[in-house]
Image 1 (tube, rainbow, N blue to C red):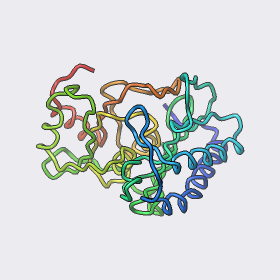
Image 2 (image 1 turned 60 degrees about the vertical axis):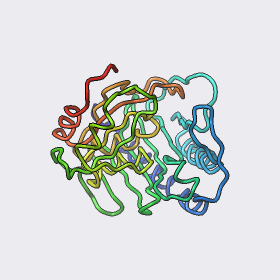
Image 3 (image 1 turned 180 degrees about the horizontal axis):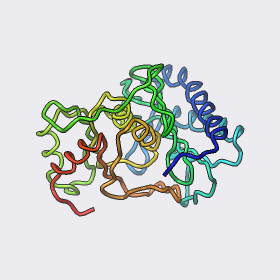
Length: 272
């Protein structure tokens, strides 16, 4: 899918997205490890900071672009919502809430601009490095003020690979053992950061068995802009036609083409 030729509309949204995310950084950093958290029915954690950031970012974008839809798992209740607007926003206000709640800085605000159901630009604030990462196809990837690219490496024992293991017991037998024995695993507790680090060249690749689109939508756009790929192996969520909190967990690998080939090759056979 190509990025829209309507550059003025996209560029306006990119600028607004970066500003909206950066405006929430003082709150995010002040609340790190200092707010009460609750547990949702699906076993995930939520804090008042998640809710406040969701309301403020999506409210700001709705004021600027009233024709766009905005989605956050923290604000949605009830039935799935059809994605009907040309442009839409998918927000994870704090990816890595388990880390955030206990004061670990490996967490992020992740905001994706979607066009016709596909991520075309991603904006991610990395709390641990106090840095804004952003990018999209045709515009490159930025790690702070530096323009960067993804690595184009092969899988080896020295490869740094982000890994998020399956939550369902027995769902993908042997996958964890295969990954931890073939490379240097990094499991930092934020799917958005795992994938964004591939886009920015900090990790060689990612294997993730237990992620939803809102966790990675922004980073998907960044990875593709950085010259790498996200290869969905089960439950491809794109194009996004409806926002559904009960969407199935995604299995994907990411990295340069050869890294994706190599990661797929080491995973034992499985039923999607």
